[in-house]
Length: 392
Image (tube, rainbow, N blue to C red; front, side, top):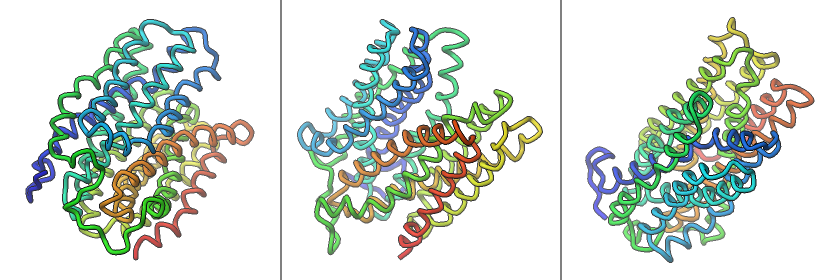
C-alpha cells in the first residue's frame, strides 16, 4: 500500500475504488425507481410495489454487519467482485419475469450485493490514505457514489415509461464491468483485514463492542438527516402541484448534496469533522422547517424559487452530514476498527432512508406532508447536542 502527498486522485487505488463505486451505485440508482414500476406492470398493487425497495434495503442492512468477516475470509478482491456480481446479474434477470415474488427475490439478492459494496468500499476509502487525509478520501469516494444518483435515478423511470423496461435492466447490469477494478484496488489494501497495521492504534482505542458504541452518536445524526432525505425523495412528487417541480426540486437537492458532500471532506481534514457538523445540523433543520411550511399545500409554479431554495438548503445539510458523520465515525472507532465503523455507519444510512418514507407517509395520511416534514425537522434538530459534543 503506497501513499503519496499529491492530489487525492493520485493515491494508488483511489481511481479503481472510484470506478468500482461508480458502476456499483449506477446499477443501484438506475433500478431503484423502476423495479417497483415493473412489479406494477406485472399486476402488483401499491403495497406490493412498496415491498420491492423495502426488501432491497432490508437485505442491505441485514448484510452489512457481516461484511468485515467476509473480507477477512475471502479477501478484498473477491468480496468487492461478489458485491458487483450480486448487484448486476439479478438486475438483468428482471427481464425474465414481472411477477412480484420473482422481483422480491431478485431485490433481496441485490440488497446483499449492495450491503457488501457500501461497507467494503467506504472502508477501503479510508484505508488507502493516511488518517490526516481521511476527509479528502471520503469526499472523493462520496463523489463517485453520489454522481450516479443524480444522473441516473431520475432517468431510469423516464426510460421505462417513455420507451421500455429492458434498457433500464441492461443499464443496471453495469456493475459487473467493475469487477477487474476490484482486484486492481485490492492490491493497495491490507490482506484480508479491515484495519491497517501501519496506522498505530490510538491510546484508549475501544474494543470491538466499544467501537460500535463510540460510532453510535454520529450514526444517530446520520439517521436523522437520511430519514428526512428519504421522506423528501419518496414524496416530492406528491408535495407539488405540477410534475416538473418535483423533478426540478430533486435535481437541485441531489446536485447540491453531491457537491457539498464532496467538498466538505477536504474542509474536515483542515478544521475537523466534529467542528463542522453542528452548523450543518442547524442548516438542515432550518431548511426542513421552511420546506414543511411550503408543502402544507401542494407547491405551485408561483412558489418555484422558494421550493428550489429549500431543496438546496436541505440538500447541503444532507450531503455535508453524510461525509462528516462518516469521517467522525472512523475517527472515534480508531484505525483498527475501520470495518466496524463502516458497517454501523452504512446500516444507519440505509435504516434512516427506509424509515423516512414510512414515517413521513404514515403522518401524511392523517395530517399532510407539512406535518410529516416538520417532524423530520424536529428529529434533525434533536441531534444537535450530539453534534455539539463532537466539537471537543
